[in-house]
Amino acid sequence: MKTLKNRQTGKLKRVSDKEAHSLVSMGYLGWDYCPKNEWKTFRKNSPSQVEGEKLEEVPSNISDKKVRKQRKEQKRQKYESRK
Image (cartoon, rainbow, N blue to C red):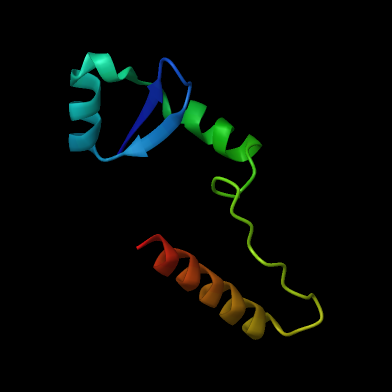
């Protein structure tokens, strides 16, 4: 895995080695290698939501097992909707 940063937009990305090599070698796309710690600090400071998606809040008065089951179901639905 490599960390890439777009020169124009400043967007950070973690991609496989092969994909990173192809993106960086095509200089007109504007991707450069950057240190992983830059990606880590960006990830810690940014919210855990992906492009405006909001996960439903789970009530705190139910058991941990039910909470995990609901989160798993939400993730499954989210990934099925992307296909």
